[in-house]
Image (cartoon, rainbow, N blue to C red):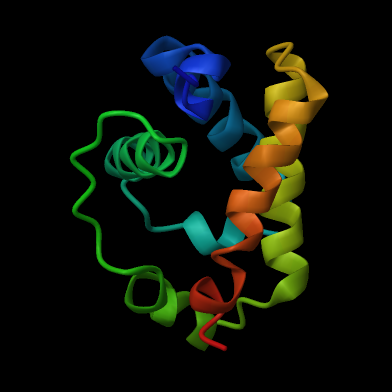
Amino acid sequence: MNKTLYERIGGEPAVNAAVDIFYRKVLLDPRINHFFENVDMEKQAAKQKAFLTMAFGGPHSYSGEDMRKGHAHLVKMGLNDSHFDAVVENLGSTLSELSVPQELIAEVVTICESTRNDVLGK
């Protein structure tokens, strides 16, 4: 049986570690950190962990708003492709730091790209 991307990355411990490192990077990134100024980061991290678990084919209970609705307020704040690129870049470098193989990172980036238009309200 083929393992899901979630299993190949290392399951829950890997997703948890990735999200924690990822948000540290995001909050230090002047291109995008202003989008998180009044955000409850604990809640945000929990949502992101649930979303990535689902996106990577793991056991999920993600009930977040759909991407378009969930990011509409950020689009109003000027969220655009350059910000989306910065987020994907931070996620990729986080996974590299965690020694995730390049081909798995490429799969993650493909999944991210599949949400771009919804996140950006296009």
